[in-house]
Length: 373
Image (cartoon, rainbow, N blue to C red; front, side):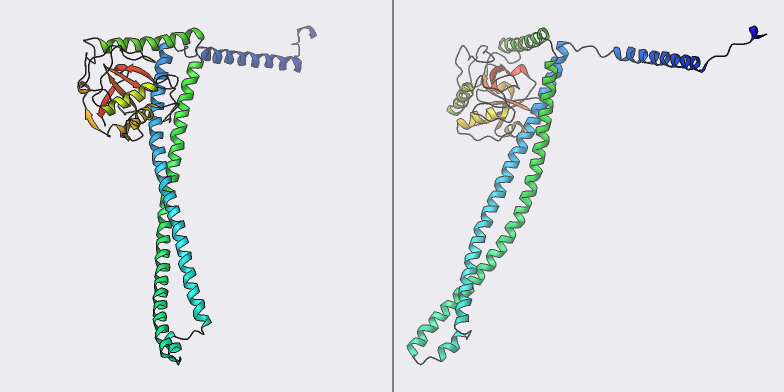
């Protein structure tokens, strides 16, 4: 009978079985999980990285121009606030002077016993002194009235200046907050682009740079073919052949339509090879609108700071009417600008990592042109 009894399982054996089963289930779940996550998105191709980096640079440039606009407004608000503060200080100084004069008159009246000047004069026994003192008293009364009027005037002016200063300070703080937002956007976009490029292998980075150079070269060739998008010549200037993108000039000189345009182009040429730095206006680095602003400043023409204000700073011209010295704008948001030099070429500050260079205007989507000077 004992031989046919069911053997009793020990508690340890049951526990071990349960533990083994639990581990098996966990292993299966983990295997399923890692199997799913093991199929991560494939590594982006060089072309995909390039497309995304180009988009990030474009978005960063949009934010850069917004930053430039916010900075311009912040600088104007700060200058206006400083002017009001200086004027308030001058008014306060004049107020103190008027108060001192009024106080001196009050002290003199107190020392004289506080009698009315007419009564004091009536008590004198010398008629000549009476007449002399009467005239002096009348002048003193006029001075006292003028001093009181000055005090009231300065008090009212200071109250108004304080109100205006408070408004300007509020505007300044708002512009500074916008400045910080746009700066954070620019920095974030550029950091994302750098991170993408840093993930490329040396071979992939070489292909990336070769693809960018090939694109620019092909567009430069297209812009100078007789049947190319830009045509062979420009109104107001002779035809030119292809220019080197980074350092060279045209093989044939470009004739600017006037001295100011020539001066602007000459200045821009002198900046070739200098780095692109967002928000920079020279002399050691530039962003796109900073370069065109500096070039035309050298020609004696004051341009606003941003691309979307520079496009309205002169007379609009069509692409077929372009002449050396014109400002050429790109993208639907008017976020990039270059200085046209003829032959379908421009000098511009392209983007971080790409110095001021000569490039074809077909390099980016054309949005319009303006003639200044």
